[in-house]
Picture (cartoon, rainbow, N blue to C red):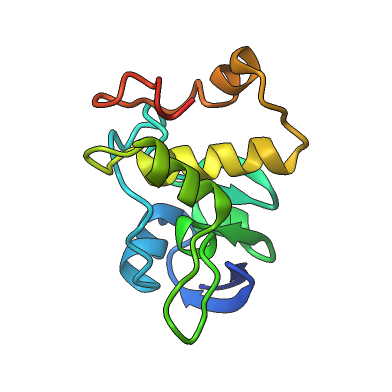
Length: 146
């Protein structure tokens, strides 16, 4: 079956079984390997992407559910430029604060944080912690990410 949707603003069409995981379509069919697989069970948040602005675990979403939707991945945060990609302000903040260590959780953390900010989130520690609660990190202890 063929599914059409948008990834980082670009239209895509993939031929895949409807129950194929969005994570696998992104990584294997579309070569967008920034989205990571951590647990494969929707528990860790490493595979978090935005579907129509909402944070979802791509390992739990069948591709048939994104037909016609807008999917945003970590690759879509940086803006292309002739000199190379220009980091999103959130990516730059993670870099400057040391919010990334091994890098497995970082794409999911960035996408959850982007959704929080896009929804009008403010610099409130408790609210930030709640918005990132679905994303596990085993390296940073969350302090630098928050």
